[in-house]
Image (spheres, rainbow, N blue to C red):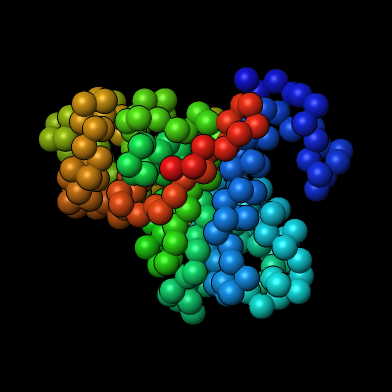
Length: 252
Ligand code: 5RP
């Protein structure tokens, strides 16, 4: 897993993709082929390392088709990606209804609930998921799980206002039973990670039994004062695409 193979990107022939990267690309390209329709004018672009393959495939649809479209980012990274790919940039306040949003995920269960926020973008990602007529997840095979929390061990990402982070942590520890919940720190622990909205991120691991009821966990966390958004998405995605090691794609 993760070892370089002879899989070469047709877009960037000098780039040799690892099996995992190839899986991400397969999922992304298949999802674009199935869900970006010629009549679509407003497209949401998520965050993470799988989404660049979504944009790669959209660019392949051609300048003529894409000049009629506007692309809405979920954060700084996807904004840069849209601009550097020569696509039209828009904002959700101009386009509160989106034809289709394509986004990555940290884990997806068999009912299409997912954990997002590994990149601290889940607030804007949830807004774009909700604004979309169709919300599609793209990921490599490691994210395809029966129950959330199986492989993604950092826990549920929670965006909090900086003023409230210590109180939210205390409540997560003592009331919601996540004793290992912690503030996400930047590389080298130079300070807390700050989201695109100027907020802090807490990562809260819960035991697997609790994660079997993601809607309950999500609403309990969201009720804590100071919490802005929870990285558990329930009943939002219409489909999830997982690229597999053998070159196949699993569609849920
Ligand atoms: C960012 C996200 C990402 O979509 C999620 O972390 C998946 O990223 P990747 O495609 O790199 O695995 O939720 O907040």
